[in-house]
Length: 202
Image (tube, rainbow, N blue to C red; front, side, top):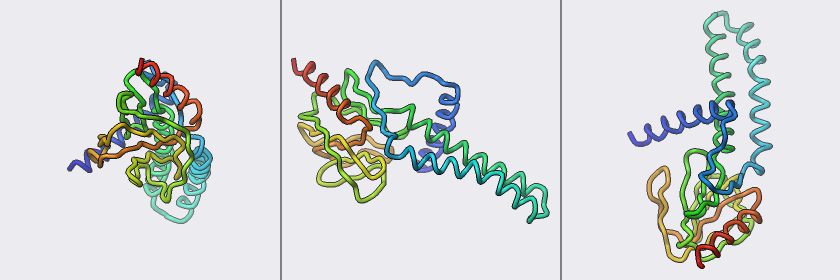
């Protein structure tokens, strides 16, 4: 049942983000500094969206001339439009949920599903380092680290003072000594985080 609840919550979040993004609602920053992570996957998403737009009239034409059943055309059209809008909502969710450097710590996010805060008191150091991951899976564990992956990459390493287990959509994960994430501007994120770390230590 929890799996069904998570699926329904993710679907609702996708449509909510589509509505908010289309309505140009301001992205909530909670007093923090935002850092996006779309650069590496934006071309891929653009290709998928472009193909979806092209597919709708082509599929409609095929169904109209091949399947002599009126409702079939409406059903395929509805599914195609739903798929296009869903992808736009997914993109909107990524744009509206950037990583944030806030007073409490580094808020690591990916869309509406992953949102965890690494508190300044728990951070020993933060540095820029590009890594290629063996999989494009969003959450990965490797070498005692939690990887929040975008496009099979991470670009920022956050070393912790002690092993910590973070709450994730599927429940609390295993304790890790590092959190590694991807940001389009790792230099800017590291600078902003180090500034907060220094202020916290004073």
